[in-house]
Length: 505
Image (cartoon, rainbow, N blue to C red; front, side, top):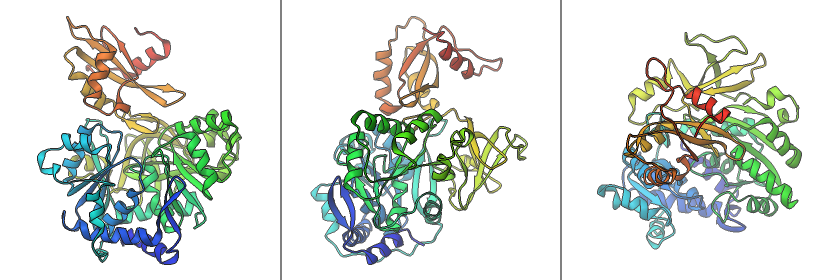
């Protein structure tokens, strides 16, 4: 089993069909995408043997398709890098994955080049340059023989210790995800389109195999990201449009549509996930766009596939359903357990655990992390939730204290580690605060070191030199001391209560 087979079949069935678009411009047919992917597969042998990791650092771009399928045809694994990360964070992932080659966009390449150690500086290929195009001058390679359990996608998700963990997803995992999408979420055919407004390094990219399997065109916005007005216009230009969007993107799209009066003519499906969608916002969006919504709940360790809220469920008006993350997906088992490992009764809160072919094989070079996450054949998500008697799962809390802002996961420990390297910071604790626009924003509580004078501006600059811009706190609040229990553990619940009460300076 090799995911390249999805492109192979589609290219034979619709060779001249439009495969990849940049805005309204067609840049690849299925036949040309297949050809370029196979030629690239041959060129990749110069960087490393089958099984090598191929890192991609890029904004959304048409090249993502040929890089993905070319890597799979060569028997390699794609390592997608979040283009919002700091170059130093990207470099850490490249090193940990021991990537054979890094494909970087012109905008990201210079900073990444400077951040990488010398062994990797000669392994960067800048997309869209003559050097990149020279890789497509050879003959098409034969598709590598691939075991279903071979690594296909090495997805790095931030860890609570501040060190990223690489979730190992096999061809079987991603094929299970793809089949589950086609079985549950959308009916897709060659008259459909996928608009890549969300990052192709994450959710939007993981839906590429399902759309390719059905011959549906891939549309990359000319802006290479999410612009609500552009998205609405693309839904007029392309047929049967679907997209994966974070809840904050859905809200921005609704506000843009209401302000302009522009309702997208050919919007078919919006799959949303990656953060909390508040019921009130969902009702407003349904009123504007109609019954086009499907919700998914998943993790990098079980990509895009744990539970779902069906399109039909959104029409129910049932607040309990609209506030949930739905029922178990096809091919996935979901349980909620207590501290003793036994299932809790319906309605009671416990940890969510899942199993199925979609679940990762483990964390790359991280035996302790793997042992903690995968126990007795089940993935322990670290998320807390409850199941109702009908099987609908509702998320209640996140035991890992993750802050989800604009659909991106931000782990407080990473931000705390960065802030603690400032000489003026004696102690720090980071929490999330609810925000109408972003879902949540990062707030840092700071205890200033004796004799120091620290400003929010100085802390902002300090963070921007160490972590990605989207991870930095939106607010800095200064305390004389952090609230702690008798064991010295910071009581984050009290900090959140202070935020709610406004009792900070």
